[in-house]
Image (cartoon, rainbow, N blue to C red; front, side, top):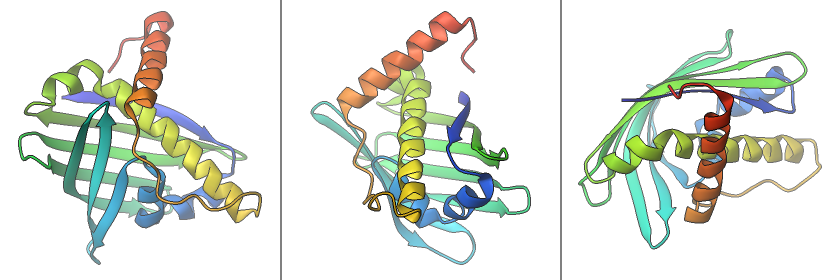
Length: 185
């Protein structure tokens, strides 16, 4: 099981960011390679997640159950998925919280586990991939906030996170980890 604990800053107050984070369709549009395909009234959502590794593309389809605590600006997530070839499976749990005053500190904490052919990659670099996805997500949320203020156009569906971006962001994450003296969780 791989654990992640990250904090990302978004240049807007939590009361402005939380309504966006409470909309699963908007959230999915900000996650590179993600698409929301179905939702129900019980807080269950189905979708896909696509990540490109050079010539190889991993595409998971799955479902997530979201439980919101709007007063605390917190959401718990339970998800699972299977890749398009049916050989790798993923399970994840997490908690997302929007805190702060003038700026939003998005706290993301969770665990994920991947089995099958992608398990070795996930164990070796999954935390760094997750950090790269979170960085792209925060940038897309910032674009969405700017669009609300009339500063820019709304982003479309976020493009799949490409192999080049994965490598550069994962390398940067690894370097920060190595020189920070912290232990990866």
